[in-house]
Amino acid sequence: TESRRKPKTALPPGWEPKDRHIRLSKEQGLDVVQEADKFKGNAEAKDLRYAQWDRAFDIWLSNSVSWGHGKKRVNDQLVFDRYAGLPQ
Image (tube, rainbow, N blue to C red):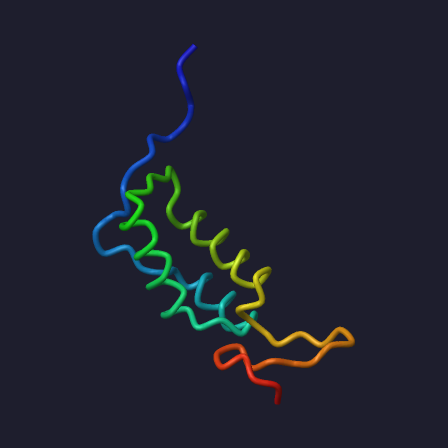
């Protein structure tokens, strides 16, 4: 049987976040420019290959939120500034 998978490729030249990425980043309190720079740098440094680069960035943004890089959280703990790590 023939594989239906798309071939994995290197980061396409000129890849940029799509409108949905910009909206999601804004909703989650992420800096889309900073996240895209980190995503591209990581992909290039590790020579990553993906079949769907836009979907890979969806996952990157989701992980960034999970890692606490987005909106500040309050759950019976101190709230920390996302950049300086200092109590507010």
